[in-house]
Amino acid sequence: MHIYKMSMKTKENMAKHPTSLTDNQHKSIKLILETKERPIYMQIVDKICGEILCGKFPENERIPSVREYGASLEVNANTVVRSYDFLQNKDIIFNKRGIGYFVADGAQDRIRQMRREMFMTEQLNDFFNEIDILNIPIEEIVELYKKHRGQ
Image (cartoon, rainbow, N blue to C red; front, side, top):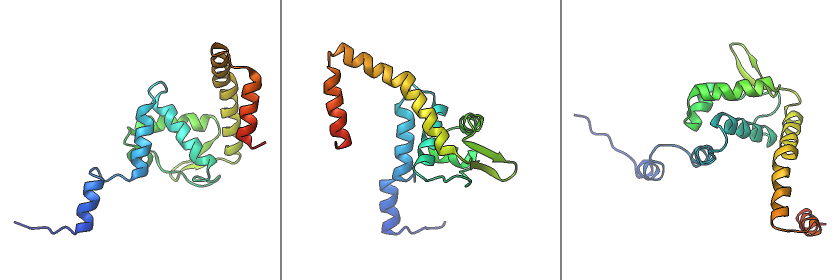
């Protein structure tokens, strides 16, 4: 019989992270599980796009493999494949066979354009409907926007 000794630090880490995931991984998983209105593969697309926009994945640099990304989010690799296929079809990432996936040139601009179109066609319409229902005058919205922008 073998007896393994654990340091206090190891025990503390296990107590804090029983599944041995980092805090960021827990946040990623929570983000994906909380938003049920949107398919998981599209939530992953949003997450990757956000990571590209914030510079975590620079243009022409490799992104995690399908298996790596799936494991980090604890989702099926097939779900990540679907996300990567979507991003590849939008020319945001590209595949170098046998090497991996990379962020395409101009990906940030394409992501901003894609998000802008979605905002203008979906979210803005919902916003306008809500201010109509609540009888909020547009002037009040403009003033709040100016405050938000620091003007």
